[in-house]
Amino acid sequence: MLDPAAGRPAGLATTRPADGPTGDPAGSNGTSANSTSASTLPVAGLVDLASARPADVTGARPAVFAAPGPVGLATRSIRVLLSPWARLSLLVVLLAAAATTVLLFEPQRLLADGWPPHLNGAAAVVVFAVAYGVCTVAFVPRPLLNLAAGALFGSQLGLGAALAGTVIGAGAAFGLGRLLGQEALRPLLRARWLKAADGQLSRHGFRSMMAARLFPGVPFWAANYCAAVSRMGWLPFLLATALGSIPNTAAYVVAGARASTPTSPVFLIAMGFIAVTGVAAAVLAWCKRHRLRGH
Image: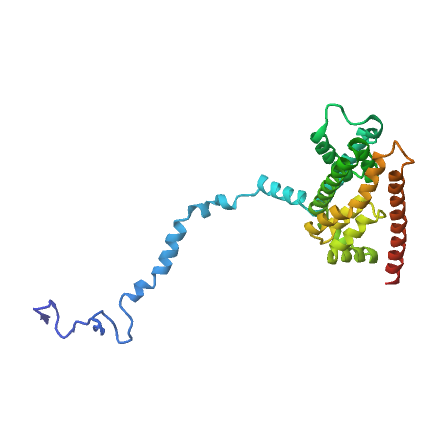
């Protein structure tokens, strides 16, 4: 028989999910009627995300991940140019070029030909001091430059120009060695006497540099570059250079200024001082050498 009210066969009950606690349709197992359809949402989301990235499907890559090409080559080139050994090679090239230029200029002609006539007064002293510094960087012996300073400018101005040139040259050599050579040369300090010299300069920089400047046994350029490779600071190096160079510089400048009267007492005193400091430097070097061998 048909149920006239519902239009269904009689005896069939209409079933519907029981309402959950919150009024949402829920079964006795606590699962929502919409949970089945909701569980399919991640899958549909993945499909949508996959369809929304045509760039990955077609194989095209974003600009961020483009092949480095010239940029990568430029980066590698910069790293090579800034490497310690590349900078050391640059230092060697610069020093060789400076030495060649000085040899072509022939600074010893200043003793015979004198200073150019169009340069005089304070300008001449400044130019000479700068040229003095450049020549010391290029391994020109300082005694020759000190004699030229005395012969050109006299005792007082010559001493001032020579000391200024000494500090300029020492600072330039120290800066070049520290910037271009320290990183490459420090790992090579493996010999015992090299380690001893490095430790002496690093721990007692001012005292060691004062001794090197007072006694002329150590070449000026060698002391500069050895100090640059060590861990000595700028201030102790420049201060010890300025103070320690005064006695010998003054002796050579006075000898150059009085070279026309080689029998004068001032000239003889200056030459005697140079000889005494030279002998003292030789004795000190001999003692240091045997002390290092003893260790």
